[in-house]
Image (cartoon, rainbow, N blue to C red; front, side, top):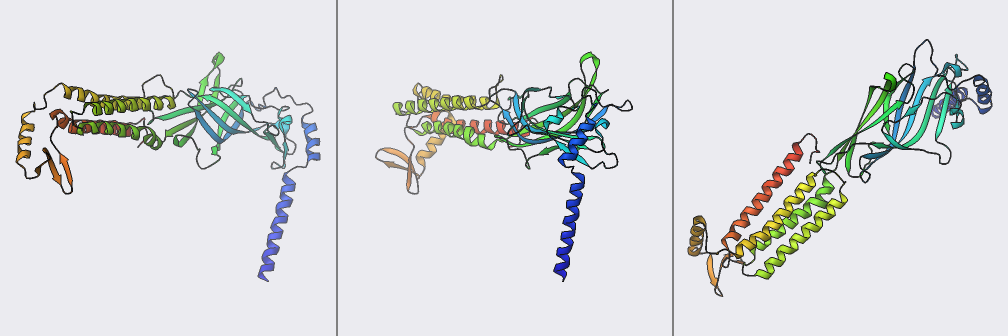
Length: 404
């Protein structure tokens, strides 16, 4: 019995819902008759101003996707749906039923007054027309107009890459009326100004996007004041792929150049070949990284890091050149004392005429070493570690960079 009552209640609600929808949504025949009537003496060139008050156009953007075009400097592409709502009493056909509406396509939008919207920073726009023009208009009984159109706009954004790949980019997207000043049209955001197709905009090479709407005012031609709707996109770059792709291989290459400090300084061909190979490797990596990075007129943070790595690799080769022209027995006092202690140590042994240190099953030979190599084994890694700490800490605490 309870199940029957439940089903009966559901059927009643569905019937009432269908009746309500049929009441609010006008059929095509009736909408055509009303449209012919309200457009008989209609002038779309005239702004619908009443009681000397400008038309308030409430605007909303539904952002589908956004693509920063780093291969086209200082531009980004925005794909969105523009929604606008305003009142035009000339199109009212039933004041007593304000929720009653009629839906029309782009042909009707060309016959009524539409706010002359343009995008001040836009360089190129696309009106989507697959399969039909993506425009529709809702005309309500009290004269309220709801307009929706899907667009793609290539907009200007002065991106700066001084801190790349730790950079945070800020791009502005502006919406304004071209010829109607505040005396005619006032642009405002809806209660929900920005909607996104997903939870977050997916952008290649960026972790997330912060969107901040705002309303500003601009003085245009002939000292007329215009309302400007402003959308600020704050793009936070994702550092993790750059570390794995760019920084980590450079660190390994620099560390590889230190292996030559442990090779016998008398083995000249091996050390020279080792040093030249690491230099060519770091130069090739540097050119490859720069070619894939966004073009910039300034030196980027990544460029500074690559120069540091190149200097360390080049320094390892120069170190061997200095080793070759200096006396291996010429050592500072502290190093001479250390060697004297090593000679007296029980860990040293004689094996095939060579000196070494036994650590368990391993035997590390200590003869045929140069005092400059001994110093470089500590100096090069310590200095490189210090510069890396300064480099990454600086970019992590700087207010204009992303947190690592």
